[in-house]
Image (cartoon, rainbow, N blue to C red; front, side):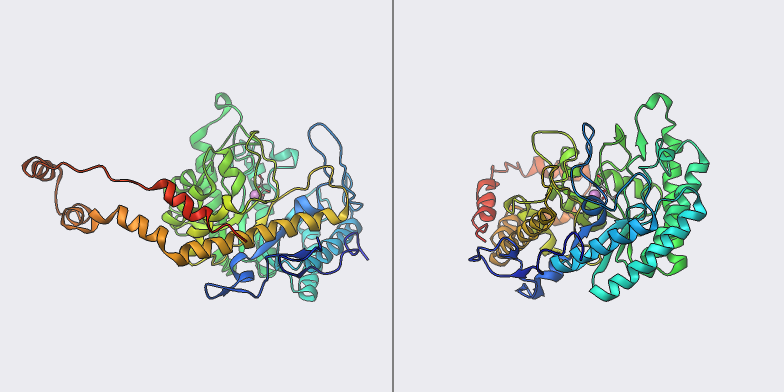
Length: 438
Ligand code: XUL
Ligand code: CO
C-alpha cells in the first residue's frame, strides 16, 4: 500500500462515462493514422513535481502530503518515494517517467557519496521498471538547486563547480543508459546571468559549449543511443538564460559544431515566457532538424512566471500537433508532464485527476490534428499560397540561377505588377477550430 493505492488502475471508458478516474478519449490502442495512440503520445510522468515537491512556493511552506520528504532524504525515504511513484505510474497507465538524479536518490554531500546513492536507487529503479513495465523517457541531472550552482553549473565562474557538474552528468547519463532511457536532457536553469556587469559572456558560452561537447563525447564512448536534448527557457531563475529559445539553441549548437548531436526538449510555457507560441517552437525545431521531445505543461497568460500547469485546452495544441503529425511523430521523444498540482490540491487522488485530464487533452488534440491533416485542406491552402515559387521565375530564384542585377532587370523589363492575394488566415484558423470536437 502506498499513498496512491486507493485509486484503481485507470481504464478507457469513453466520452459517456461518469467516472472521473477513467479516460474519456485516451484509448491507448486506438489507431490514429496507422499508429497506436500510446505510440503517438508517449506520455511521461515527472518525478520532481509529482513526488519530490511538497507544494511550497516563495511565500509559503509545503501543503501536499509527501511523507517521504524532509531536509535530508535518507535511503529509506528515497525507497518509500520510489515505491509510491511506481505505484502511481502503473495505476495511471503512463508508459514513461522522467527524473532528475536528486529527485530520486538519498541526499549526498560528496561526489563519491552522490555516485553511491544514485547507484543504489538506480538498481531499485531498474527492478521497479522491470516489475511494472514503466520505461524511462529521459533522465537529467539537477545542476541548479544546490547552493554550489548559484552561479551556474557549466557556466559557473568556478571550474570546481564545472567539475561537480561533470560528475553529476556522467553518473546520471550512465544510469539513464543502463535504464534504457530514450533521451538525456540538460535544462540550463542557471546557465545564464543575473547581471552582465560581473559576467564574462564569451567565456561562459565557451564553457557551456565545452561542457556539451564533453557530454556528447561521453555518450558515444558508453554507447548511449538516445538523444541529448537541451531544454530552452528564456529566464527564471536567471535574468537571462543562454538557451532562451529554439533559435538561440540552434545558433549555439552551430557555433560549437553540435547541430548533428543535440536536439531540443520544448516546453509549452517556456515558449510563452520567451514571447513565442508553442507551435512556433515546434515548427522551428522541426525546420532546423533539432526537434526532440516536449514538456507539455502550460503557463498562465496573465502572469510571467513558470506556473507549470497541466494542459486542458486541446484547441491551443492542435497546430503543434499538425506539425508533429506531418513530421511523422516522435522518434525518441514524448510528452512529459513537467507539471505541478496547485497548492490546494491536497488529496492524493488529485495527482490522478490532473494527469487523466492532461492525457485526455493530448488525445483530443491528436484526434483533431489527425483530422486536419487527413482533410488536406490546410496543406492545400499553403501549397496554393506558394504556388508561384513552383513556376519558372520562382524556380530560377530558388535554384540560384539568377543574380540580383539580372532579377532587377527582369522585374523592370517585364513591368511586374504582382496582384495582392489573400492569405486566408481566418479560413486556416477555422480549419483547426472545426475539428476540435472530441
Ligand atoms: C524548469 C524545467 C525543468 C526541466 C528539467 O522550468 O522545465 O523541470 O524540465 O530540469
Ligand atoms: Co521542463
